[in-house]
Length: 385
Image (cartoon, rainbow, N blue to C red; front, side, top):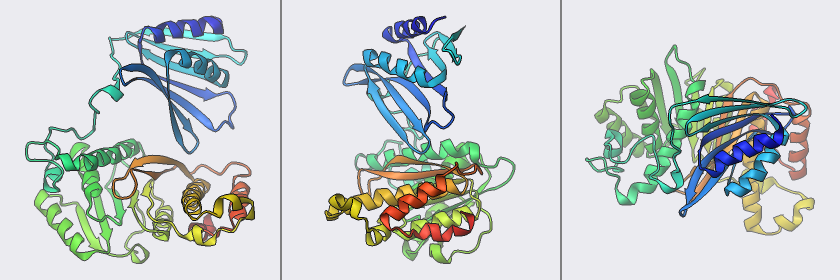
């Protein structure tokens, strides 16, 4: 099959709204930052679109295109990638391109599948509205019949978004022993209880979870809730991240809203404990804001608001790069956060042990040198860099 015929065959199916899902992968250039692209149909304001999810080395990006626009985007992508797997309503199509762009097209009939146009339908949550979950009822998010309280629906969405990250992490957690999880700065512990419920009750994992926070009254309240719910492998302790030295190895570290360098301390502890999964939503970030000195960026940094926002973005970029340098696959993800801004950044890192790319450490040094940055996390991890 020729390339032109391949595009024609795909677009006929796209035009007939047959697409259920697709993945385009295998970059022609091994050094390419864009690793794969996922496609799915969505309905937005009664109009049909194809959503493209671009999975880069460290970030995810999304774009919604009309079918006509998708045609041009597919041509661009198949100039860069060698493989495509498309699930249509009643068939699966696997495409492989040779170095000279010769097309191998294999099709397989499947049971009839229907696309979920999620933008126009009720969101399919891992924890469903209408089903009572004891911890959500106890925490005041749900009524006893399982309906979500109107004023708590944003919190319900946040909890489900967090559970999606937990679900994605399952493959990285051990299956043959007790999973050890630490949550630094657990606060009121909505997400700590959600994590425990999902992994222990829904997935049946053997685990031990510790929530750590400085506020004694909050910890005591959480202890009472855990006891009432029979969550006997969930404990809450009063303590400071800087002084917690009770572990030598941990499987997952969660840190939500730990202020400034408390986030870095938690990340450093996670690395030294060889944590397989790290999920971190930073809070206020002032370290770099106080350090930054870059005449080249003076046009930006002369404005206090811009300097603050740039410093926060640069700080999380530095954190992600440092984790990558010490053997983690790291991404900066969008996270629903109702306590601070409507949307925030979550740092997601999986331990792979992969060695840094050639020149990666030098590029990091150039970036921090440009900003005159001396990151706390870099100092904590200096023996591993």
